[in-house]
Length: 321
Image 1 (cartoon, rainbow, N blue to C red):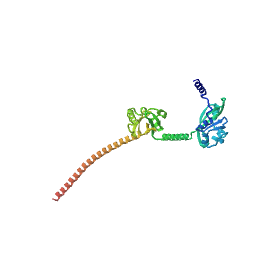
Image 2: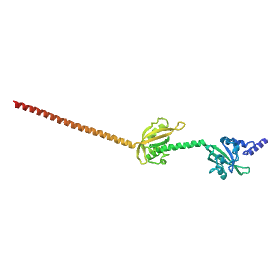
Image 3: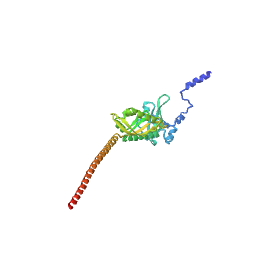
Image 4: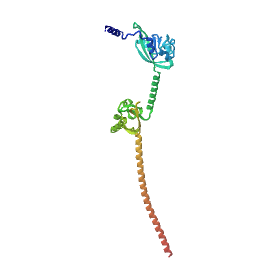
């Protein structure tokens, strides 16, 4: 029993202390990413197997060479070199650095290494290739910029509303129509702020059914909106449902065209057409009356001519007698 207690105490003393059974070279090579040990003068002291495989180099091509000459094709370190920052601040650092070799981009993690006396000796330099991620991020940024350009130049209002009715996105045309800035609109409730009070419940109920999957969205609507200045504008909307990767409805994207002036013009045109029809009817009625009067006059003249003719014939007969 005493022997067991003695063993346990010895094990506790050794906790946290490196054991000779651990092969540090094996651990170094077990790091899946390229890793190097580099001194303060940027000289490569050691590399792991992942470094050789990644860059298709032999160990002797790296050991004793400056890391900047190998990875950056330069005899001087790049600006804000992570190794220099670690050397200066004596603390670990992670940074993103472009590598000249194969035009790759890496996240560089650097940590100071100390000797047996606790003095700063060298740096553990681990490289994580993020080239594909960087390209994907750049492509995503390009697509976002392109989409933003489309939003900016669109001649119609574009607005994205989530299932709670909160505005997630609106384009400049939408801001222009509503009379607010983008900052004033995004994050506010669409229904409570930009739909006339008399229509809010109706519109909310319609979209609530759509968001709950209980009703199919009618893509085209004519819905009035309320501007900052209290004006009512009539908008014709094309509505598309937005879903996440799992098919869950997350909101709607609506494009709206302001047809207020067009509707006013159509109404005025309709009124004018009715007015013209009334004028035509009135004129036709007047012409009918005049024609009727002329017919009566014609009949009187014709009757008078007939009587005059008969009278002349009668006079001729009398003269012969």
